[in-house]
Length: 337
Image 1 (cartoon, rainbow, N blue to C red):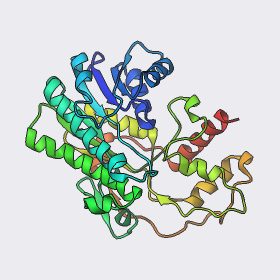
Image 2 (tube, one colour; image 1 turned 30 degrees about the horizontal axis):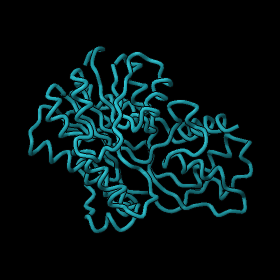
Image 3 (tube, rainbow, N blue to C red; image 1 turned 90 degrees about the vertical axis):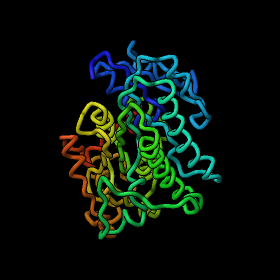
Image 4 (tube, rainbow, N blue to C red; image 1 turned 135 degrees about the vertical axis):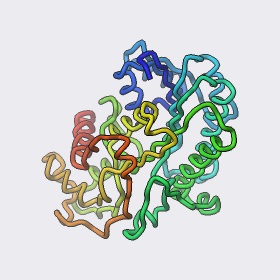
């Protein structure tokens, strides 16, 4: 890829996507982003302050032909990063709010490339560890997950509740992408990025004001607790958003990443107690937050993550949990004081 390469980023105002767009521009790529409204696009353009960015409005990625006009307007695009997909657990209609947008958004992106983007060489889709194993498997210390693992969730379970709905949405959308490549044999080469829980600061300090996204709320939710309140029993693996952004770029720049799934996990499972320990070790202003039982790790370790192939491709050392949490809280604290 050269400095004149133009990269399309769907869902460009998302938590991960903003970092990706910012990093692409730093590397001198031209970027076309899709946004849900011109107001969002104008604000992002103002934040980036770069003539290397422009945007197209895609109000609803699940509408047939959603990305067609974007590619018609920009025949210079040769890399397509599809990051747009719903990530929340607040819905009474899992099928319409989580599953269909994820699956149909992926279909619409790939169909648009087939029809109007024959020049596109590389496609990267933001998937998730949720597409590789069920929640139960991720919590099972005897279960092994690697780059070839799949979550075997079915539609019936996926529509039963928002949590399984999210796991299903990532699984079905990623499978749809690989099936598309297998059956349609397009010109492009597909890769996916499969992160675990994504922590880390916002791409722009002003975005840390108020209520943050689903992943960040794991941390900010603890900051709002008071000493007498119960500590949530949260456990998950994590990756810093800056490492996720880098992986998206490596995914299309590296020949080694062709047709690969890059699984992003920085460490074994964290617990709420570990997050509290980090908070109290670094921030005196949050002394009202529960202390819990410092130095203890609740529960058991999660599954065995065998990600050697990913690490060999990325050739980087991931940001650790403490730095990721501290950077997030420092930014959040500065923005909300």
